[in-house]
Image 1 (tube, protein in one colour):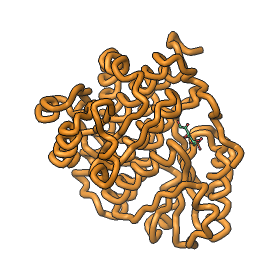
Image 2 (image 1 turned 45 degrees about the vertical axis):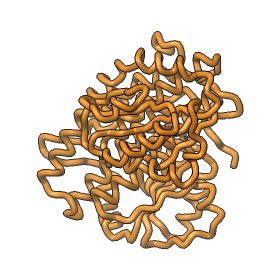
Image 3 (image 1 turned 60 degrees about the horizontal axis):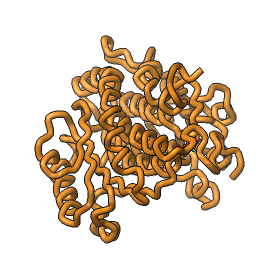
Length: 366
Ligand code: F6R
């Protein structure tokens, strides 16, 4: 059942090329330069007339929502807010029939997300679901939706659900961008082709496994860890930190890299590993100077860089290379080594990676 892998989590990490491909299959038609998603097409007017999109979710799905915020705003120029379902539902939120809500949930059973959906519906909002489990409560409670086709996710730590959620949300953003005219048809074609290349890049990237394992060995006794990223990769930093804490029980925090100097930099010393995402097209110069700030305080740098990088290589203690891509799609790549790093550290610490203590796969109580 684990297909030769030691844990479901590792199996599911390795399933991502296929999961992403399955998720865009039949929807992304690059030859014809179209995106076909019935749930979006049938409600196109509602999407185009929306004042804003509010994304609600919990945990890793909330992180996918944050990535989507950057993508929707950049591609489709629609204002997006991303909310924790648990906060949204108890806040008496200002929401009405001009709002579109996108609810993201792997299980489709998360109690807070389900309650937030019911509240949004009662205020007249249109609610679109992005779920993995077919026929789940959230899939049934939403007005329309698009499934991720990740296949069953058994490991409690979410991996392929995250990357397929980003894939679905990217397809929606691209479709809306074309409909609104905020993206040229040539850019649209280019992005479709680029998105189609992601699975093979993930496949190639999975070869960093041994290298990541070596890095894991050197940090498995660290009590703390910081994750930094900017732009599209800020949410990836949050997700990297969540993955590490939930399965290895190492305290970890994710931050936008530029926020370092507003507090967290005080934590840096020679025992603090800092994982920095420094892709070549993503505010690269600024991230390099963030890395220098950490280095001058003797922090240990594990950098995720684009193949061919030279500047970060000179200062980082370790680099993990990812294939080049459009920056907007880079979270689909940068996430992979962070999943592997958490996995290996947790295994080396003898943690139960598939069923971490105190956690459940579906959180059906609030
Ligand atoms: C993290 C994790 C949780 C879930 C969260 C939402 O690895 O698994 O943070 O992401 O409980 O679950 P869904 O997506 O099922 O609503």
